[in-house]
Image (cartoon, rainbow, N blue to C red):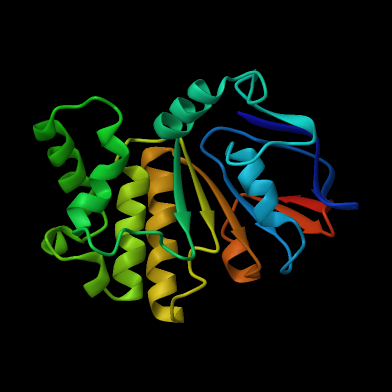
Length: 225
């Protein structure tokens, strides 16, 4: 269970302050798919970053099974993100000079696994996203859809409980985007991974069991399927 309580985020730039989040509350039960919906600048990506521990709240808190992110040390928070969370971003964030296999191996290197175990897990993750035949290809040689598949393999290789996907189809054509969406929701259903999708795409949001609508940093509506 993820519980968001009275979440505020304010950015200070000199004498100017911008309140990106303004007292947001909601819950995400384990295994659910949730869409955070809003236009550009609505605060939806900021909300995701705070929920995932990539940024800190100015006020309020994010709790995972009643454990507060604010209560964690930097070391514990990094360990929590590495072990429990997978990330899929619009920009892919793959290392272009590395092979697909090497990119997927990255999250496992800090877990202390043997090389043999790391490679086995990474190859299995690539197989799950139908990219095993591209394991030795460099990321720079892949199409957009292939890059996103590799980024999903990297997200699931450490067997996370939650995947945060920020506009995961934003740089893809519609047909490729549909395949990526199908893959993410298959992972949600077959592995029980909680899926949190940040999007402005209503069609994508309709696939989720819960929808959180954000405008100007505030939750304006919450819908449950």
